[in-house]
Image (cartoon, rainbow, N blue to C red):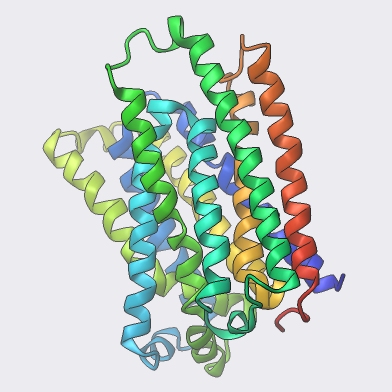
Length: 352
């Protein structure tokens, strides 16, 4: 395996782990509700961080973006809009069905859609050379996705077992139907979550070329893709919380809790970093990077979410089959990422 491909796998793995564990600052909040931390963190993650990085590292970034076809920019933002809707739904699901189960179902569906689609409908740049599903690489990647779905099923089964075991104490005040509605929401979020990878995979080629023509370095140019693509995600992830803040007349809560503002900013930073890492990891992995990179991120995202669940006490007091299922799920998810990496090894070298 070439060094750059190995680096791509490591970068994609880090992306998933950071994203999976990113909600931990939320667990330290006492005064902020969803609308408070979402408004601050998403504005920081989806607008301020990518644009500040782009304008700092990319010469004449605005001039470069103006040379890109408007239709391509619109497509990128529509993909990120879908992802943005998924984030709203996922954040709401955290409190309905728990972090680990939310990540499990969301990532299973997201992996199937996000990994397989770029091999059927070719993405941009180096990803246009991705082998089809009927190739040796494609069939191996398909097998990897299948293994991942088994792992996610076990993780979800473990989550159900955990919820049932903790029901008398953990959900005594829950609304009737809250858990069922959470499941519906997370399924929809799973389909839409593939927009995260699509926003980069289907639009990065011309955008990176335009930035590099103005003198931007490779990594800086890949971050700039997110700056111009995440407007759609920012739209829903800032306007919806702003609507709730106005409806509930709770804007004053922001100014009254500076410590929780800092926690929200930290969550936003941990939300932005995985995007930067995902884009670079995809490119390093080469032609199959849009599929394998996204799959690796989804798998490690689940692992990160499970680690956060254990550390935050979601599994405290849970024993028996749920624990057996979650341990099996972790092992199978690791195996699935190994199969995805094997599939990637059957393709040609990575992007420069």
